[in-house]
View 1 (cartoon, rainbow, N blue to C red):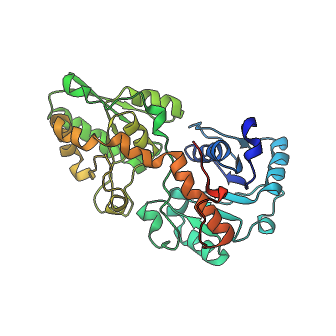
View 2 (view 1 turned 45 degrees about the vertical axis):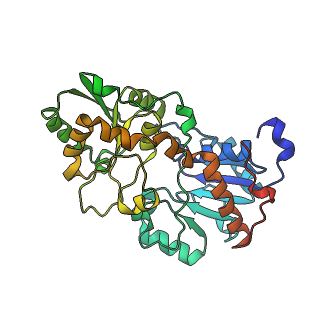
View 3 (view 1 turned 90 degrees about the vertical axis):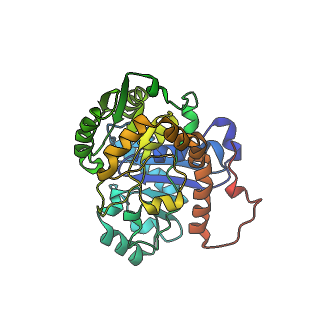
Length: 342
């Protein structure tokens, strides 16, 4: 908590807990709470990963374990991400109840364990928060799914919309899969090869894997077009953009990702080009040869991203926090609990 704001901190002690940092989400939320609300927050994770988005307390030595126990003892609200992880010496059943915790899911943590997750929440009565992902939502409809992932596009304000590749002999395409099989990299690369013979520009591909986010951003900045994930028609997965799509849009890059109708029912104006594996080749040719189509689609990209600003998303989380603490109740606009200052 910034020293000059200590006197303002009359609200909750909020503790984020997870096995790993999920694309920087917990640290980002912790910072927003500490810098912009009356509440205080800390963040515990068990392990680091190579993406290195940020961290607070990582459980990698005995001193950290003691600090974690102190934070758990002081917490008013537990914001778990992906799961309730095992921490040595902590009996969660003695600390948790329906009015002081919830689990915030982000993807594979629920998609790969749907029956177990659904059964856990129905049996325990603990609150579960989903994302706008049909594969997460289906058969878990009782979980709310309207709170999006945070993304701060203001960090990329110096990047203009980039259509310069129409005036160049070479177009650079980036693809940055953390899981190549899930992103269908094995479809994307051969299809790009076929596109080379159909367009006048040379195409160069930057494939980024296994590198920290800082390096991935540097390589993405060198591209003109970014491909997130392309999936075949009929696959029982969902189609929605990840953090890498938001990053590339904020950088002004033309962005391609398979989107589904569930996602687009929530965000119909998404400035993302969508295609399945069956239509990807033709879409890429159109992007490379039809500048007016691309400029029209991308025109609102910077404005569209504003709805995911961490402060705007935190306003939604604060309502969820009180819903958990007090149950469904009417809200007074003057209540400082919900105040978020810039």
